[in-house]
Length: 269
Ligand SMILES: NC(=O)c1ccc[n+]([C@@H]2O[C@H](COP(=O)([O-])OP(=O)(O)OC[C@H]3O[C@@H](n4cnc5c(N)ncnc54)[C@H](O)[C@@H]3O)[C@@H](O)[C@H]2O)c1
Image (cartoon, rainbow, N blue to C red; front, side):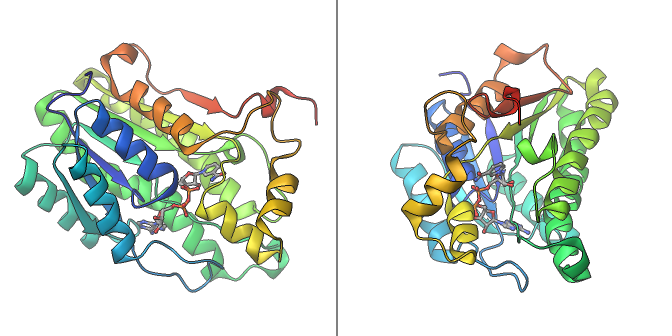
């Protein structure tokens, strides 16, 4: 096991890509803190995780033999993040790995987008990543080690129709990562980005339902043309890349973005 006695915080870890990452980090020996909002958001057209979703996630990790706690935390709020970091340090004494995965999206043209809609997406992805780093980085600097893995998207490297807010946030995460990587390099803290392609999680299912599409039909529409290799990207494909960036195998990789998109972005449009 490559992460024995490590402690990992995974935001938005109650389901989807975050849960897959949490389980795979645990399989490598890490104890896990799942930090999730567990509450719906007014302009997001599908449900977020619930307290029960988070409890089930924590139980799944515990039953695999690791320690785990769930903390209700909205990454947009400093007070929630500060309290989550405090609770983590009380429970486990340190934070070795931070996965900034919490995310959401609505689909809206810029001219029709409310400021609240913009804020709920930008504040979750970009401000949330900043706030979590702000409160975790000092501990990593003090212990002279740490791995931060920020989750962007193919939408951090190109535009999506009806996704200007999402793409702005995801591009921002890549710039933020490069700058933070420079700041903390001398403290033995590595900061990298994973950019998933289309993964069939509750987020994608929620967006499909917003367009009134049945699951199979939506999968066909969303996945067709998004894959170069003939394979579906799973949450575990994202999780395995997160784990890799959390290990010493990648000790000389920092400030980088890794696309896990089965070749989508190397295809001509
Ligand atoms: N699924 C995809 O196709 C895809 C593609 C590229 C990038 N991503 C990114 O992967 C990450 C995970 O997405 P997913 O597809 O697993 O979605 P998901 O909806 O299944 O999971 C997201 C989790 O984040 C939580 N969350 C949302 N807002 C939060 C907030 N403000 N504070 C704390 N928790 C919050 C939700 O409750 C949920 O548990 C996101 O950053 C997303 O943008 C997903």
